[in-house]
Length: 337
Image (cartoon, rainbow, N blue to C red; front, side, top):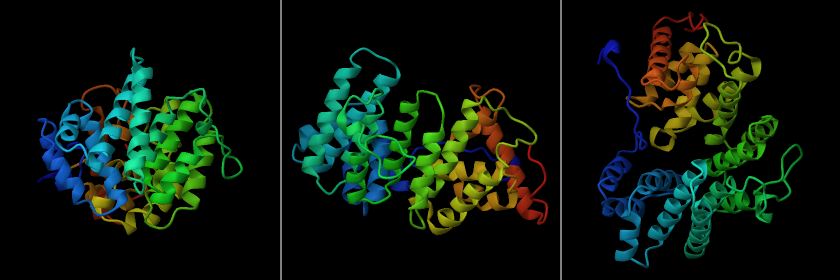
């Protein structure tokens, strides 16, 4: 396809073609493909990723309830029930709907039940971490435990430890902790988030998606500071910004395969390298995306982030600039925009 004709698409399954089929069936209320997919999922990292996507889709239907009615002893169905109830509770809290507290209690009980039925599974603990952000006042003791290191904050460290015991450095678990920090900060300083992601990335092994975490905080700071699209935005070309992008490129992207990568992580890395004027380095990251993209973080670089197609326009301009730089070596440090 010619570059001028290329249009990216968003799909939560990304390069996971088996997951895409299950999502398609789930959207029509059919659950058998979901069950079969989960039965064949080989490791906890992919299991976590797939159950998260399926839970987001299933939250709008009764498919998981139908599955449990048909197979009441299914452990996978119990885990998916936890996923669905947590997703519904988080949505209700975000939208400040009546009944949010009841949904939170149902979700908490569902998570505990799933943890009992599937003791080796990190997902129930990841789900409990997702619920922790709803406890904005940290009323529950498990949400204000002492941190494991200096410069960190009281929080749900016991829940993170339970996830780590089952799947060390689980990507979603650490992202849920980051969301907890944002809820706890209530729009204030991001210093706690910076300390957390640097701590997490510093102990992560090569190939871990935790090396991408610092890029998320940099985008969040830009968003909170009402950053706007500029020909040269100094927010992205700092020494720290380039270092974080380089570490994610070297320690994560270069050591993983498409199906193991979160589509969101790849977009954040492409965005960081483009923003740092590392155009040629960003080119293989854009190529790894294939036909896919995610609206965030690209929408934050638009003058009209809420407008239809705004994120896609920024993405296409960045992608074109980087792929062109790859074809013309030695010109990657030119200004973006």
